Length: 419
Image (cartoon, rainbow, N blue to C red; front, side, top):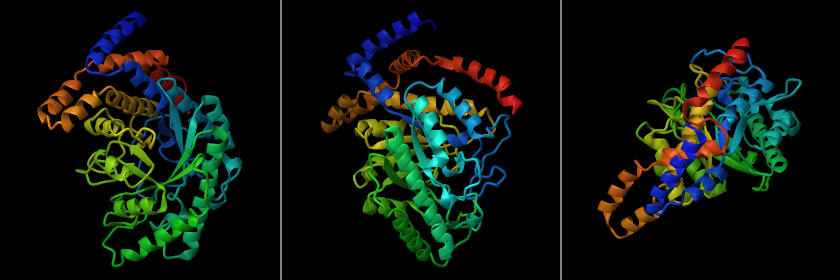
């Protein structure tokens, strides 16, 4: 479509939404202010740069062999820049500790801010915020599937020191970039078959976390988050860091709680958990992903649950308390396209939520007019939100519609296939 057609369609859509009491300009302003944290590990299949030949462990699997996985930090940054050029709105980047950019090998309990200075300089140039994660998998000291809950005190201490070091890097990100870094702690700890003692590992995990998080850090620069999981490969029978464990930990210790859309039973959804957890936990972090039967981390779709997640955030006015991040890794397709598809879908779902006639819906519900509520919910799905999305893309100078695919294919032919 031409620019004139896009503007004309937007003006018509704006008039339609006004009839429902929705201000599209305000919705676009909020969308532009709300960053999506794009995860770096889609670009290289979760290998990182600490020791690229190390096999993945901890239930982490990236399937597929599409050409062009990034092999260096510079390549990964270039690939993300390409993705950014095709994605509208405000972005952040979520890094794992294994994405260290140092000139020599550094053990995980010895990582320091200077080992990530190139990432910070790059983020400044790209006008990005950075988030961080200690990496408690794919390491010899995690080979038996236990880290912070390990019965061996020496191994536990190694991982405690790694988390401590990671917090200082996260704080460094926040101070340098002027926006708080969310540092999420996820561990693979669990057992393949039924354990006899479920309590002791959880007691050790609580103690390890308390020790790792002892130092108070200004939340203007750094926020700790903890992330649960139902089960994983090699931990099918028991996961130490369950939902109940981490919800209680976050509520009693004042950390943020990370909800990953793939970390629950297939019939559970995190959209229903957001409002419940928000009563007891100040800050929430989301890993928006698409599980297929299990935590398989497929590229985010514009599906019912993604839309429901964004509606819950918007309907309950939680945009300032929820950090939206993505988490998927698919090596069966072009990795840049995966970022573009997943991030644009998350933004589309957020925009659609911002364009919902929430006040009218709440008024109907509060007056027990459930007929109007249901009718308005269903009719709002058909409102011309796509015209507002196209206008948003045009305003951000990124491709409208499927035009982005040509840029990805050209980049693949000229850059990715030469690696």
